Length: 98
Image (tube, rainbow, N blue to C red; front, top):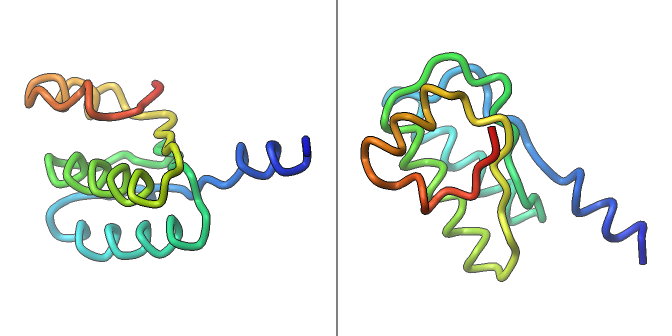
């Protein structure tokens, strides 16, 4: 049983270094495929360049996981993106840890 729990903890994928309007569609699709394959979170540590499109992608990933009935965890959200989420009033919708 603990093996299953440990597997769930490590089933995250990385966001990539850039998540902007230009890359959002490809990032969205790649993340949705990972979620469909069982991923339950994303590590945003590599994320260095982003715009508001990143928020839309993160929210879509959360909705996709929720539709599968699994919690989705966003870790290492950059402070700038967290501030942007707060400015848009969507910070409470993201299950993010900084």
